[in-house]
Length: 239
Length: 80
Picture (spheres, rainbow over the protein chains, first blue to last red):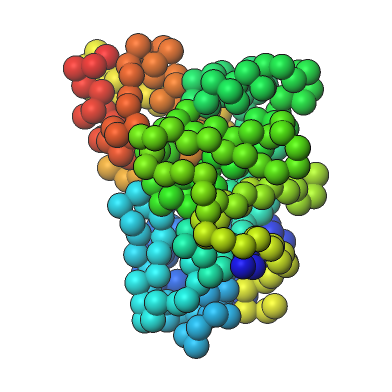
C-alpha cells in the first residue's frame, strides 16, 4: 500500500491570477469560510489547502477539481460527498509555511504538520504535555535533556493528531488514552486503552521533517502489508 | 461572573495565546477557530488556561460547546 503525500508552500504561491483561479475552484461555503479568517495568511492557507485537495483528488478520479462536493463528518473532518466516491481516502493539514494532503487506498488516513517555531514557550509545551499526553509520554519527555524536549513534544503531538484525524474524531478523542513509544528501536509503537474501541493491529505510522521548521506525521489504518510513502511538492493547477 | 466578565476573561486567555490579534472586529457568533486561525493546540491551551485561571474543567465531550465566543459564554455561565 502506497500513500501519496502532496506538499505545497502557500506563502510561495503569489501569482494573483493563479490565486483567483483557486478561488474559482472553491464552493460558496469554502469561499465564505475563507472570508471569515481575519488575517491574509490564514485566508491564503485555507485557499491553497482547499485548492490542493481538489486538484489532488482529481488525479485519482475523472472529476474536474471544481466539481468535488465535500461534506464534514460530525467532528469537522472534510470528506467527499460526490459526484463520485473515489477509491482513495484523503486527509489535509496546514500550518504556517506548509500545507499537505495525504491520499491512498487505505481504510483511514490522518496527517498532521506543525511548525517548530510556532508560538508556545518550552514551559508551556511541557505543561500541555502533562495535561493532555499519556503518562508514559510525559515520563519520556521528562527524561530527555531540556534542549531535546521541544523536538520530542512535536513528534508526539503530530503523531497524536494524525491518529485522531485518521479516526475522524479530532480532539474529542482523549489524547491521554493512547500512547506512542518512540524509544524502542526504529519503529513507532502505539498502545491504546480499551475505551477507545481500537487496537494497534493494522495501524502504520510514520514521521519526518520538511526543511528546518516543519515536522509531519502520518497515521494509516490498513490491515496487512507494509506502508510506502511517496512525497512530492505540488502546485495546484500547475504541477 | 456575569456574561460580560466571562467574555472578557475568555478574550484575555486568547490574547495571551494569540498576542497579535485585535479583537475589535471579532464576531461573537462566528467560529473562533476560523476567525483567528486557531488550531487544536491553541484550543487545548485555552481549555488548560480556563482550568488554571478559573478552575473550570471542560471535558472532551463538551469541546464542541466552545465554538464561538457566544457559545463559550453560554457554556461557562454559572461555572465561573
